Image 1 (spheres, one colour):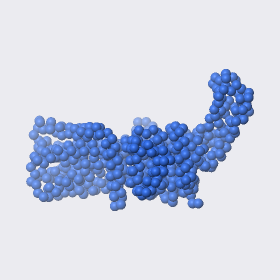
Image 2 (cartoon, chains in turn orange, red):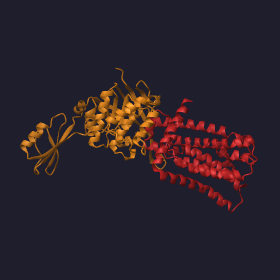
Image 3 (cartoon, each protein chain N blue to C red):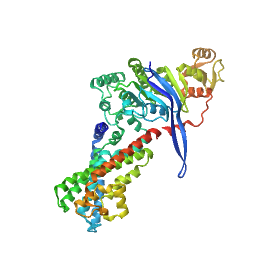
Length: 333
Length: 270
């Protein structure tokens, strides 16, 4: 099948001017995206991750036509986004996690009516899409509520619906679960899975939440310093990154560090101890062995967070951060 | 032409949304409209205070200064009502919400122009219209059909010139996001300047306001013609009729500046 999204050595270079003193400016070039190539087939669901300032947002902005690339070739649905921004707009949906496109003081439904007219969606299609979104995203009770009164999770669901009313072939989501509670995250993820499998909508999402990737994406792309560091299945990322999960155990009393094969104690705080073990391994035998040898009261398993996995992966690939990532983020966002 | 139709359609849709948003806070709307009326009326109160001490300003009596004031205030008020919120573009660039407008299938200029559309700005237009009404009753103009027809042309051309200033100022904010103060100097500063007769200012300033930033065509030039006074800088009488052309030229230049600004934003981010 022809790729739906196509990037060939795409670059984005920013001139950054920084104040170095009174009236003094220092100019330097920041390569926010430095020769990235990838393709996404129709119907794929891809996670796009990386540290802050790695170039994720810049890539999304180029894919949506907001920014013009400085070099390379970029096509979405055969369209050059920066040249035909408005034509492309009819075929893509965009959700910016922290910037709502809904009308703050108006009932939710009013924002949808505006989309209906602005995108010139045929009445029947609009009805059908709205009904489906309202049902699956549980918006029925919220349609007449002013957006300012919605919770963060409700607003995110509202934003996702707003991005889908015109039947986009691809949906870009920038941090769609940021700040949401567990229930809201589950609803959003369930909906995206359904959207992808039932409607075949291509989904590209950036996230800091590893569970988003685990539960949604068959493929993950890792970018750092504007370069593609990894492109493949999530399991492979764990292997490359040698990531670790953490087992938190509560013992009856304070004891010396637990000694056990395949795990090492990273922290002790009173009767509570933290043990790291490979993410690819199973927690069950560890738990059994600890329970047999130590007075175990309670335990929990923590998944590695995505930053840690990526950091390890980047480290194992021999790439040490060249500059504090926050600086670069300020420069590009 | 398709772009213009599309732009007007977008503008109408978004302005309507903002009007309904405002109506969510009715009391606040009534109060801000009144405040807009009262605060802008202070400019005229200042002029009245001056005339309590003198009979003429630069050789112009109160009724004729009120005529200048009314024309300037209504023209500017119309532009301010239509696209006054464009001065907040820098804010949108800074907080990144401009991007949400760029992914929609609608002209960005129209979306930004209609942003935060507020009918409260009718306060200034109303106030200016009242002063203009008073002036029309008290000035001595030998009305002819041509002169009567010129009145609406003056007001619309003036609004067009101020709109161009708003758009150009917004375009500049793509490059310098905190430039809204600079823009205010030309918009609010411009309208205040035009409330006084050109004869009270130095020749250099009048030249600048005629040939560089042609605000003089909002009211000074055509009003001088209507009142039978010599035109500023000794310009010929026919220049009283070129305001619409000046407005079109200004809008074209401003549109060009907008394109350049938007292109620079899309190539540099912020």
